Structures are given as C-alpha cells and as structure tokens.
Image 1: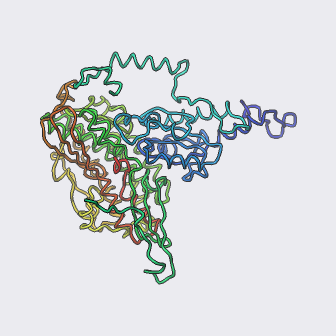
Image 2 (image 1 turned 30 degrees about the vertical axis):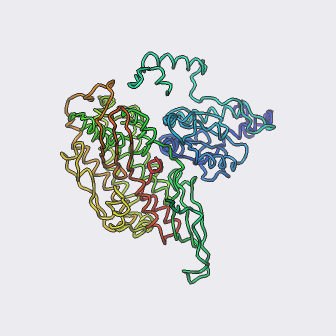
Image 3 (image 1 turned 120 degrees about the horizontal axis):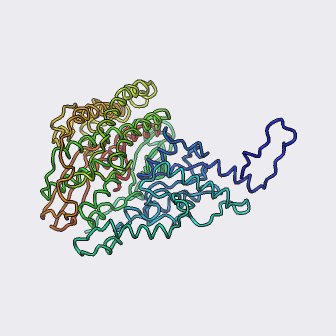
Length: 217
Length: 386
C-alpha cells in the first residue's frame, strides 16, 4: 500500500502529513511485528529453529524474529510437527491463551493431513484444522526454511489485504503457501494424479492392485 | 488378576518442613509439554521445595505416533521412511539399523561400496547432530552465541546431504540391499572441504565455550551419574561413556567398515554434565578422523545389490540388530511370519533410557541445573514416544 514510499521526508514542510486509512496503517504495523511462539513437536521444529533463530536464514528481515516462549506474548503460532490426540487439547489451550489477533501457520505434511502417519496410526491427528483455525499451510516434510519464509510472507499479505480493524484476525479461506502463480489447486491435483499413474506404480504384492494400494487400502 | 497401577493421583506431598530446617512447603509444578528447554513436547512433573528439585516424574505420550503399529502394516521398504522421524537428528543411522536387520533376516548381501558410503554418511550425521547439540546446550545455559555457531557449521553438512540425498533432515537414504541412489560426483570433494573447515571450528568451540568459567560452573560436578546407575538404567551412547563405561558398538561389535578404521572411544570419568559435554566434543574429533580414513578409499561397485521391485520376504523367525546412533544404541526387533510385512516391528530407542536417568541425577539440584542436565543428556522426544 506504500506507506514507506509516501512517508514525508523530515524537514519537508510541504509534505509533512500523510493520507491513508486507519485500516491500512494498523494492518501494516500488525503484519510487520508478528511474534512467533516456540512450539515445535518434532522434525519440523529443527527447520523452524533453522529459520527463526539460526545463522544462515534471517527471519528478522520480515519482522518476525522475536520468538517468545509463552503464548501470552505471542501472536503467531507456528505449528511445527505432528500433533497427536494427546497433544491436541494442549495445542488448543495454547491457541486460546494467545492474545488476539492471532494467526496460525501450520508447517509440514503432518499438520496438513497427518503426513507419513496418515495410514494405520491410531493417534495422529489427520490435519490440525480440526483443532485450531489455520491461516497458512506450508507443505513439506519438513519444509525448508525458505518455504516457511514464503508462508510468513503470505500471511503478511493476508493481513495487509484482507483484514479490517472491525474484524481483527478475520480470515478467508486457508491458502497453500507454495502455490505457483497462475495455477489452481485443482490443476495441481490433476497433474499429481496423472504423475502417480504414470510413474509411481507400486504393486501391492498381496493384492496386485496398484491403484487401490496408492489410495491407502 | 488385577494390578494396581500407580497414577499421578497417588502422589502425595509430605507435611511442611519434614526434611528441611526451614519451614518450607513442597509443591508440584508442571514443566512442559510446551516448554523451550524440554526440546519438544516432554512433560516433566517436578516436586519442588522452593527452587530445589525433590523428584522428577517424566510424563510421556505427547508425540506418540504409533510408528511400530504403522510398521506392522507396511512392507519392509516402507518402514524406512518412518524411522527417519524417530530420532530425526540420526535419521541415517535409524535407516541403517532397519536395513541391517532386514538384510540379515532375508539374507541380502551388500558390497564394500555400500558399507563405505553408509559409514561415511553415518559419521557425517553424527557430526551434524553433535554440532546442533553443542549449539543447543549453549542456548539452554543462557548463551545464544553457540547456537549461531553450531547451526552455521551444521548447515555445511546439511548441504552435503542435500546434494546427494535430496533431503536436509529426513533422509530415507539407506534401504535394505543398498542405498536409494549413488553419491553425487561432488560428494568426496565437498566432504573433504567440510572436514578441513570443521577441524579448526572444533578447536574454536573449545576456546569459546569449553573453557568458559560460567559453563564450567554450570556443568562440572552437576548431575553425577555413576557407572552402576548408568548401566542399570540402560543408558547408552555418550551418556554411558561419560560415566566411564567404554561401551561403543562401533568398537565392540563393528558393523559397516568400522572394523577397518582406527579411532578412539571417548570416555569420561565422573559422569557429570561436564563429562557428557566433553565426550561429545571428543566424539566430533573422532568422527572427523573416521571420515578422513574412508573418504579417499570408497571402492567402485553398485549402490544396490537387489532389485527394488522385488518384495522382501524374510523367513519365519525373530531378528534383532543394533548399532550406535549419535545418542546411543538403537535396536530393531522384527518378528517375521514369512510374509512381506513384519508381524511385529519393535524399536529399542536410546533416548527412552537416557531420559529415565534424569529421575535419579536431577534430584537435589536447582531447576536451572535440571535444564542443564537435561540438555547434557541430549534427548530427542519423538525418539522416546515413537
């Protein structure tokens, strides 16, 4: 929206006021001061540490480096890792303890659908959207730090463009962070289905039926 | 037959001032499951007297994903990617132990090239894991700088893995009968560069942290685990070796090509947090030594000895194999009924036992020391809960 560009230079008497809407200013401030909560349960936590704290990837460029250990000081919940049934109430409580407006980024396949533990597991949640409302999903097992950055940038875009003061934290449909431009989810699904049929034919030796096997019996 | 199960409700507190000259009162406090110093979702129930820890009760299950049950419903190759997610910092060693047992059970032979590459990869992973641990123990003791240094050096190893394997963390590389793919043409060159880079860095670690007076005050003579206790708790890996027991499967039952290389087993004396720290730093040097002896001599050959499409069906029986990960002995137990899926798939993971010695050694210390002791044990929670 360009506050940065239109901000007046100090000492310039002709342009020392700025016209904008309150929504824009508040959303601009909000999107650039996300405080994530350190919440890592498994493998994705290492990549999240890599992204948020460590030396090669610098999250502070995007204004989200103040990682807090208590939910009461945080407004961004990055769920990094599998959530099992026993952990789900804890996750919900953490979410409810966070101050509003609060945002959730779910990283990794496990938080999207259960990931590698989707079949035959009696404990894993098949996606955390049943427990907390998710703003942005970041696919990967685990997603690279760059993917997490893309997720944070997507969330910032959502906050800037889709939020009003009247409805803080109001969100539209969840988006997939790493969606390529000019492509819809349905197109990707079709392409993936084609690829699966062409290349990844794994025969179930018990049944001999490849398609049924791929769909998890 | 009914068995009385002891639950948390059965825990009672003694009357105030029972074992203290001051009039104090004991109380329970929850540490976790969401706590930055528990490295994940471990929940510790602490019985405290002021700041003194009277009792530590670990409560598990917050990341129990049922990997053993999924393993029983998967073919032998499909279990490989599951064990990556146990102890994700030793993913390659976890791959290896399953492959080792399946190979032994089904009578699959491997060649020298495969074993060389496996050994080099495992030692690289050990370096990667220990550099991460070194950064994290610094952060747990309140110093943020080691975290940056440790993760900086870890990234170089991660790049090497990414080039050959395609993954940064969950490798899925070693499979029954060989490897998923051959090493990248740059692998040897980059590994050598990494070793040349890392050797002075380990000395830098010593200068930066090991000699620091605060670090020594926080670690030396804190959380002493005697050799008898270490054995009776079933601890393995650096935790056991720090207590003075030179038990290292790489030396005692050489697998891979560990029999052909010369290296020393790092052993501590007192079994305190400091010994656990210094044993791991010494192990980093030994890993560098092992890779240096192997990296120039990788023999030619195939990276796979069996056809991937062929279903593996071990004959009926019980099979067990174990090896040394960065944290201790991982064992894999497979009961086969002759089909292509295991009848029972069990894993003996090192962190479960290593965690449990915390109940003994953290007693009597302050809460801050508990964090330092837990960090010196280097536990990974999904490995405990599986």
